[in-house]
Image (tube, rainbow over all chains, first blue to last red; front, side, top):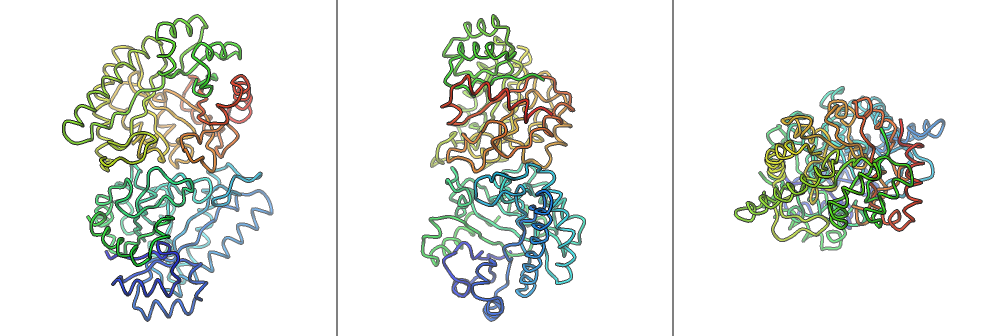
Length: 287
Length: 287
């Protein structure tokens, strides 16, 4: 396993700056975001990461597949649009030769990420979960034909209303099982899964389905904007070593991405953030 | 199933006022809090609920059993103190003839509810969960001798750091299995479990272990103090009917408590709150 910088950790760096930063700090891999790739341009992004000799440990992110749960024409249109957007993301992941395309599957139909509840939305959680399975049946073959692995990311249950109706690793794993390992895997992100009483059993069960291991700490108490509750490893409540050991024991040999959404981290000098990240990775993450 | 007022929903009412309120609104049961019982006095509280003809659907709450996970003498002292406090709670539940004593088991050792992380605490989540099992082995027979049922309450994973290392119904159920159904059961609280992909399977599996069914909605976004994210049924994201139907199908015939921690609800006229609660129970909770 080798350390990778998810570029949202240093979000004020452009893609070229993040690539330079990885090289300067001796990292072998980078996790990219579609927004940043679009800003630099796909072809130029591909050129930069290749000439720097970096692996692309993941592309973030596809998903938001649940709006099809809205009634009638609205639902059908939203479902078709979501599939189209995800096909574009798959194409980009193929160009970038990303190890996987991370899927954040979306929350309750009609609820937008980070926004208050709208007047019309669906409380049919079971139905929303079925929409994800349906979308996966459309997207997995498309990804497979392009050599892209879809990586289902379970999100902490606090994000169930608006970001991901996949809430546990076990649930992500069940959704992946109908497809070849090369087409659909799962992401283990410590922030999202640290609390799960079935975590170690499900990591072992996931085995070669583990498409990515992302680390950051879980801050307590969470800030008012709960999206920004991700902290530098060691600053929160997670005991990382047993989780890392379990992921290794399951056979995972890929990169370990550090993905931190945090106002203080973003305000700091990105070079210092990367230096701290490397030190904390050795001190608290490695088993 | 019959509607019960958990008295924290009308927290500005004293116990005598809450008992009067239940009678005035035609409710047959009340869920009591130890703080409120202490304020009125145990003997007087017993007298009031009996003469009003109310069932006590639960006593809230025992628990906070994990501090024993602190190292050395601190841990041993904390564990002994927690057991002693819980024995007192069991005695009170026996006097009140409460249907169960709700246990909120506590978070990571050394982390206090609602407070920032202290300098010294334990990140050993697995160990904290073992401490709960150990405490239960001490308390279950004591409760059994007094005819009290302990009710393990899984809390939403957002409370795992500071309030409850029991995060799912399945996990609570596993912990209850070594004991007779009369001694240890589980609580299904919609706020805490609505997101769980295994919820319906675990409710069915729980069967007669279900010692209490508590309802309130899950607000989105949560307020800054996440403890106050509990809303009146219909004001949040939960689809109640399938959960109520599952609890009924599992054989539960006890009372349905409405327990809401919410600044706006507390600021409102308690009589209006109870009236709204009755209406919403019919409209959105009943299967």
